[in-house]
Amino acid sequence: MITVTEATATAGALRRLSEAGVSIWLDDLSRRRIESGNLAELIETKHVVGVTTNPSIFQAAIGSGEGYEEQLADLATRGVTVDEAVRMMTTADVRAAADVLRPVHEATGGRDGWVSIEVDPRLAHDTRATVAEARQLAWLVDRPNVMIKIPATRAGLPAITEVVGAGISVNVTLIFSLERYREVMDAYLAGLEKAQAAGLDLAGIHSVASFFVSRVDSEIDKRLTVLGTDEALALKGKAALANARLAYEAYENVFAGSRFTALAGARAHAQRPLWASTGVKDPAFRDTLYVEELVAPGTVNTMPEATLNAAADHGDVRGDTVTGGYAQARADLAAVERLGISYDEVVEQLEQEGVAKFEVAWQDLLDAVTKSLDSKGVDGE
Image (tube, rainbow, N blue to C red):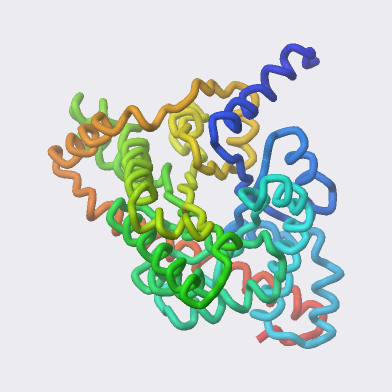
C-alpha cells in the first residue's frame, strides 16, 4: 500500500522536472488510452503536457484492432483503400488526443498541449510529397495544437521550411547528428522568415526538434564492447548524453543569435529541443538515465509510459544537468573518436536505420489493416 508520503514523493519527481523547465510528453497513443480516460489521468497525475506518435506506435495500437472495430467496419463498407483507412484512423486518434490536451494548450499559451503526427515515412526522401502530406494532415486533424512530424532527412530540410512558412507547426524528428541539428534550426528560421514575409502571425507557429538519445548509445556502446578495453568500456553510456548536451549548446547559441532575435520581435517562438528515444535499452544503466541527465530549461522529454512511471517512482531530479557539461561532452565524444569509432558514420547509419524502421512499421500497419478490411469482405488494395 502506498502511503501519502510515498505518493507525494513520486509525484514530486515529475513536478520537479516540470519546474526545472522540462515539458513532459508521452511517447504513445492508442484509442483505448483516449477512450478509457487514461490520457486525461496522466495529464492530471503525471504532469503530462503533450503526446508524440510515430509509425511504430500506430502499428502497435491499430495493428491490435482493439477499439477500432467500428471504424474499420465503416471504412470497409465504404470500400476505401488501405492508405485512406490508415489515414482516417490515425488522424481520428490525434484529433481526439488534441481535444483532451486542448485545456493544457490554452493554459500554457500554446507552449504545450501538443499532439504530433508523422507524415508517411515512405515520403522521407521526397520534399514535395512531404509538404503535400503535411498540409493534408494539418487539414484533416484541424486542431490548433497539432504538430506535423517531418523527418530530418536531406529532403526533409526544405520541407520544414515550406511547411513552417505556411504557418503549420512542426515536430522535426529523427535527428541524430549535431550538424544535421544545426541544419534543422536553420530550416526552421528560414520557415519563420517565409511566414513573416507572407504576413502570417508568427505567434501561432511552434516547433520542436526531436533529438534521439538512446539509439546513439546502443550503436556506439556495441562498438565499445567489441573493442573491450578498459578505456572503451569506461565510455559506455556517455556518448548519447554528450551528443544531446552539445545539441543544447547549439540551441542556446542559435536562439540567442541576431537572426532569431529579429524574429522574436515579431512574436516568434524558439524551436525547443525535444529528447526522444529516452527509454533505456541497456539494463546495466539506470532506467531513468535519459530523464535525470537531460534536465535543462526550455526542453521537452517525450517518454514511453514505462520510463514515465520509472521517473515518477524513483526519479532523481536535481536541477539542470546539461548546461555545465559542454566541455566534458566534447571530451567524451573525442575519446570515442580516438578509439576509431567514427561519429559521422554512426549518426549517418542511425538516420538511415530510423527511416527504414518506420517504413517497416508503416508497412506492417498497412498489412494488418488490409487483413481487417478483407475480413469484412472488402478489397483493401
